[in-house]
Length: 445
View 1: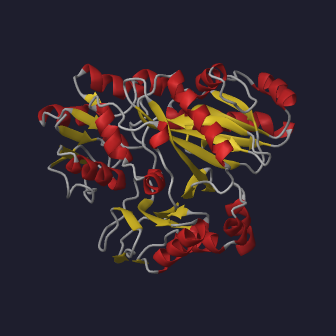
View 2 (view 1 turned 135 degrees about the vertical axis):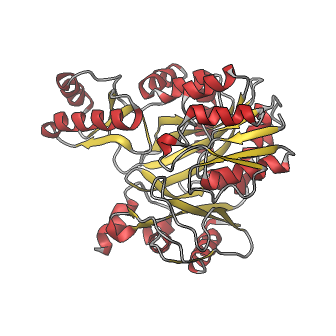
């Protein structure tokens, strides 16, 4: 494996290019018209279409044509776009490319949320009480009464908060089911919906998995991703303040069982809900690298993207579970071109000035720079700031300092919101849930 095409853009494209360079691999970047901020470090770069993602980053024919013409050995999908598309992964393999991710079968199994629930139950992984795919409103009403309100409707092929609807009373169920189906069809081309018991004010805790093609699987601890807006993550930290060593071991073991159940290889994340009684429930598995992977890298010293590449090249894991040590505390803040005062409305535009933070144990991943026109066609994240500290208190202080010295002029960003979160007593206590940001915003009105 000597040349890798990165079928993505922005921050994750740069991240993969850097890992490839350290391993001595050449890289091929692709870009949409006017979206070239990520191509500067690549060995080669090719335009694959107009700005809308459907005409460029999701244009499979154009992507694979570039891969064939440049004689790439492998394709790294990054996250989003085609990263969890089993058809794309299978097509890559059929054309002789190494798909840097799990098998198409594993992607498909875990991408279908109802099928994933069945697999997890069979593997002994705790799941939230719920249903398979629902076909009509009457069936949903029977199940909701059996499970007990409130319930959450979810798109069977969903993720990222799309196709999700909270239903707190029977009168709202039929309409919510219709909306969830419509959103699922629009976002994923699949209108199937299932139902789960709504766990009130949980923590969102995920376990990082690393597996090779020789049956070896390890977990790299957890990340707390409970600071969210619209079911989308905004700030992540590792480790989770609520986990004891025993609970960490139990969740890690469950995540390893989940990975083995689908013969997983590469990096992946098993996401759980953790209730106030420290019961945890499987939510979903993301069969790709995660946006928040740097916090795990910071506390383990393991480069996850290089590990992805090495596993895809056929190497065995160089570590076992007993080799993995957790050191210190890490926090990541997603810097998005959004206006928190307007409900986190996306705010693309010209960055007149960008000055990122510096100093010890501060990392910035992103493409933001002075004079860059943030495009309106893609995710609003322009950078990630990640810090490490010897303990949680130092990590919070370091992140606060890093955010205060970050200067962005021309567009609104989420930085003021992050500063509020870091100073919020509930966050400082470590005893917070997915309800934190909602309470903070209510207080600020």
